[in-house]
Amino acid sequence: MAERPIVIYGDPVLREVSEEVDEINQEIKDLVSDLTDTLKKAKGLGLSAVQIGVLKRVFIIDLSAVDITEKLRVFINPEIIETGDPVEFEEGCLSFPGIYQKIERPARVKVRAKDLDGVTFTFEANGVAARAILHENDHLSGKLFIDYLSPMARSMLKGRLRKLSKAS
Image (cartoon, rainbow, N blue to C red; front, top):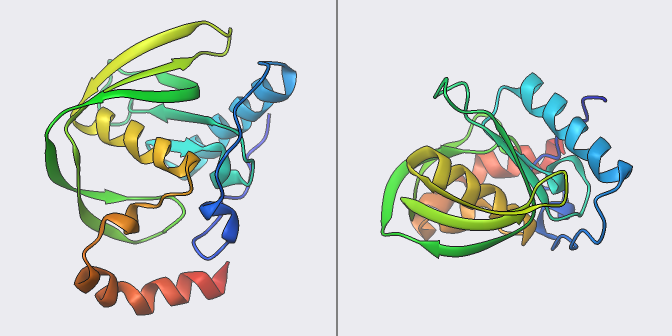
């Protein structure tokens, strides 16, 4: 459909809790199409609806840039069922351009969600895929990757975050 602007840190919508999707209709399909166009243009690994200002429990991940066997995956009303042991790895976010930090997240995740046809599925992921799913799922609850930083790490980023916040 169309690329949409990505919401940047400082916009209060990023802290909002997204609503369940009641029906997978044309509006939701158009939203996923817009998310896909926006993600491709931004060259990211994942994008949630809230990052384009839509408070719906929808996100996509596309890891084909890091694994050619991967494809675009759509998660509607996702629910994390199980996670593994945490590992530390560098993470970024399209809503925080230019900011990358080491974040501790589970190395494995099992998630249940619906696809664009309304079919419920369970998906297990490891490594980067698990990280992307957990990162995007956090967005749906108003949680941001900087929330995982230590107070000292946040303090060191304070100036850059303030600059982003003013630009939004």
